[in-house]
Amino acid sequence: MRAAEGSNRTARTDEAWWHSAVVYQIYPRSFADSNNDGIGDLPGIVAHLDHIAGLGIDVIWLSPVYRSPQTDNGYDISDYQDVDPLFGTLEDLDVLIDAVHARGMKFVMDLVVNHTSDEHPWFVQSRQSRTGPKADWYFWRDARPGTVGGEPGSEPNNWGSAFSGSAWQWSPDRGQFYLHLFSARQPDLNWDNPAVRDAIFAMMNWWLDRGIDGFRMDVINFISKDPELPDGSVTDSGYGDGMPYFAHGPQIHAYLAEMRRRVFDGRPDTYLTVGEMPGVTPEQAREFTDRVHGHLAMVFQFEHVSLDHDGDKWTTRKVTVSDLRETLGRWQEALADAGWNSLYWNNHDQPRAVSRFGDDTTYWRESATALATVLHLHRGTPYVYQGEELGMTNVPFDDIASFRDVESLNHYADQTQRLRVEPRVVLDALRRSGRDNARTPMQWTGDPGAGFSDAPPWIPVNPNHCWLNAASQVDDPDSIYQYYRALIALRHSEPVVVSGDFTLLDVRSETVYAFRRRLGDQVIDVVANLSVERVTAASVDLGTDGILIGNYPSDRRLVGALEPWEARAYRR
Image (cartoon, rainbow, N blue to C red; front, side, top):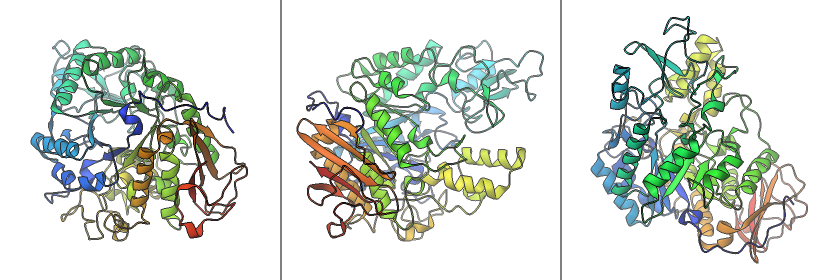
């Protein structure tokens, strides 16, 4: 066993509502198209809310629907207080919020305030003048001394962008560079300017007044930069790594504390606040989510979804069960008493988990449900990304013309043009690790458009929709959808799943993930074989009695062994 085997924790009476909740993420562009223009929209979401409610979901997180040029599919916002016509209107959004609430669920918006679109009026004004009222709402810097602005090597520092190339873009209008940690069309806001914070907090209050129940905050730990903006260590990309200077900047706690005070603390309700934080450590996450002194309900960390990265996301390595045990177990231990974990395999930025960590061929159903069992029975708030409840898989994209994501397109251009890598090699990496794997249309039916749209969709439908779809699963008691429904019901009915201590079990197996949850005299043991081989697990009673949930039918369960990708949760 790892750590002390539980301290007989008793059920808390002050648990926040999100501790027992399960969140469902909707990527609106790909969820459901109501007007047959090939792009998902708000009325399309309303039409399918019962699919989500049927799972037992408590919260819907909606990815951005704000007005946007769509360079990064809505994460480049040009108006924080309007809906992009691609998705509908503000009135359509009000209808959606009311429909979500009518089904007993809460509604959370994506908040993208590290950067805006370069078409946002704030940036348009900032670019026009060095002395105007919004001149320093973004990070502007002169060219390096002794260089010609706009020429290669004249950038203020050597940082690379997350979307390839330099993190600096020359603006001839202003005669300076501006910082963009992502696309050149996503300039970074200068949170050191109090006027920027005033505008952001006013906007957040406007949304809460409109009836939403919280925010998921995009790369929120990037909002405070080292004011010196120093060069970073050069990576294989040829650019410097700026993460040490912006991933946990000097004012991050001050700014989030100010946000909590000015947006949330004066309100009678409690809101879900989730901070996406690339590079965050368990110790930092504990500070951010501390029940008394923290600023956020929980954070999204990236350690477990970086385990298959070998230097960068495009070069992969095999993830072992030991890797998962060590990483997830460490996060469980670090946030056990004072903080709170978010639990996820999938989201709009990650390839599909069943293809990445599971087996999307022979043991598709078994591996999808085994991964779900492990995740949902940890301590924390689980997240389900659209299609995950069906076991949606990665996509066999034909060629570069099938991809849409700015990160993938920029990477392909950089690798094939600047570095002269063979296109087939780059395409293999994109098919394996690209974000578009998560963004193909939701597979509602086996019809030609997957029930998503009658028009050609904005991105190709996965060919396997003919058999992998919601229509074939919702009423099938043995489906992945129904298994997710049972897992969520278990969380809602068993206090030990929400509040119990977490202890890793030493089963002396390279492929078995096992842990114990304990709350007073309530004990649940979770045992999962994450491999294609039948295995035994020493020190764990693998009987067939007392099973709360399992992904194999009872007549196929063995005593003393687990079948390939078999998962069981026992009441002890």
